[in-house]
Image (cartoon, rainbow, N blue to C red; front, side, top):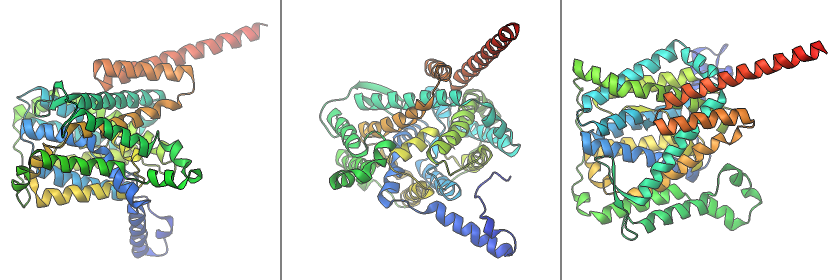
Length: 448
């Protein structure tokens, strides 16, 4: 498993023996966790909450997912991925499994965990056998960009829905139009969007020009916008239901091994794992590795490594009732958008989750359920736009055609697998057409 985990410092190998190797690994771990900018990394840690909080809350309210257990395990996952990769590698709920659970009342905790374990086992198998490396090299960039664009637009459209309409997270449904004023009103959400635009601008290109800007513009760019939005959201959550603070209870949730029946395995595989596996392979491994290399060219994270960490963490956590999780290109884009540049970003988020899970356990649900959903929509909107913007590097008409076809099919069918198949077919047909045209041109020139 040469592709797994930490890259060994060459100086640590050889003459110094095990001691120097351990010293090299320790230096590498410290470097992976080192903050590039304190407020930037802390701000980036909040950039993925627009996806994480709504899904986890929905399952906690509708399917009795234990919030405390999920916080503890996802906190550990965050800390490990930050330590290993040195980039803001996200930990997100598996969305297809969550969607299946919210749509089907009979899809309960045993089925959710069975789906997570089966998906993790498949991805781990691809990683350990290095088949994931073949998938990574086989899939054209235009198809990957199509999947990223579809996922980014999905996030952005969900964010607009969160902003415009009141949500019943327990049922996963939109209610009536959101009122203009109030502690979770439309004005608050729009103000958050405007605030983030003013602080963060359009993205990395603008950030690179800050050295030439006036001092007040540089100072504005250093404001941790996502942290401000999150803190305001917590304050408003307490203001909406002050009694929730008194309902908090100290101590972690009691962990139990989930009993999974034969029928739960069957339903988990059919309804959860089958639709989740293509999304995990394409978006959580292939797309996230491509995006990592786009954002951090000096990093060469292997699909094998990402597959192994994703599979291993779920094969442990799901048995205790933690939400099945994966790495996702959308989470990476969101954390990068808000300033995350190192593994310390997600490690800090992991420490926060772990502390809340151990100190308050499942009682945190009483406060988080009051969090203004419009503010979560504001955070999710920018994560989606940042992910979709990665598709801007398609330079030829053929690449753009394949990308947009893949995106359209993925969005309309709500299936990354179907979009992937259509994109691959279009890419193959265009390649064959180009070969035929070249052969015809060569033969005509030969005749002349």
